[in-house]
Image 1 (cartoon, rainbow, N blue to C red):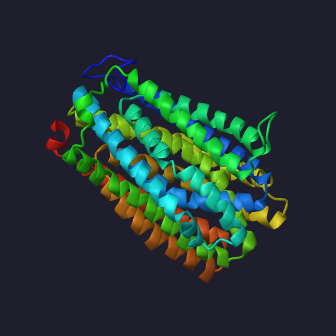
Image 2 (cartoon, helix red, strand yellow):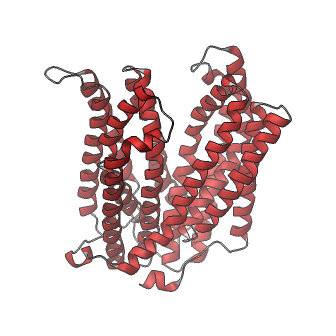
Length: 460
């Protein structure tokens, strides 16, 4: 298979066993990358907490707004990932290079635009979050430092996605691990001071983040220049309207899906708050523990998007569908194992976050219910990656909107509040939402109605 021209030769047909191996080779670096991002995020928060709780709140509200920025940047990454995979699969390496260059141009434009928005509207945006005056001052400082150079975030997303589209998931993993470790070291030095370097507090944390992203962007550029399949040329740096439109129309539903999810979370979080402070705390802690399971599903979703995109680019639909099934089944198996961990050890892990017995009990209830959701979640996340690989980015957006607004939010209220099931009702509602989406995605996949790709998009 052609999943990475640097590692394996192109052949027309390979065994199922080899396809499983290829899927694992692509998925595991993405899983490891996600793991380090999650672990090191905890460490980063720990350092900030040593400054003050106000600093933690400032970072928290900033990250809430940055999540919107990142949804847009990520959508550009998904779009170019799909198109590069299509062209590499079709062995149209010149076209893969051209669309990659167009994506970099678009990422630069969008990144600079968000930077300008931050420069002029950082404080008003934070005020919309309803923050206190003490948090607003520190939040504005932190927000401006990390988000005015938003172009670094958008460029990193796109460069990583280009490499993944070419079948290289190891390089983004290496860069992510490297810059996160660098970020931790710089956090310690710039926040607390070291030798002749003064303690900069929250500003130091922000500067550390920016330096790490700059290094990450430069590293990705260097790796991309070594690619044997992608060759950037000067004339392709001119703005190409039709390819820009293709990237925007392909990526927009991905951004919309993430924004829909964010808004839906705000809605049902409001209902969870009604259940009481302890229940909301238990819900948040359970979610923080569960997030580790997403690493596996997202890793296999990444592999599925690449392999499906490359197979369809090579007009090998049967291979694309088989890779989709392999990635999904592997994800279900591993997520089921995670489910066992959550069921039997979730309460114990929760005890590291709080010493209140009633909160620990609620955490355990939430995670024991979540244990049964894990294989369903695997289907949702991985098949979303499959649909993305088939250029069908709209359908996951539609069912996400219906699921989180029409099912999750409604049933959180009915089960959690009206029927008095509390946190159990909340997590049953989450399970019903995921089950709804999993059934619809699987049904459409089985009916061979999941690919939305015009021949002109591959031959352009």
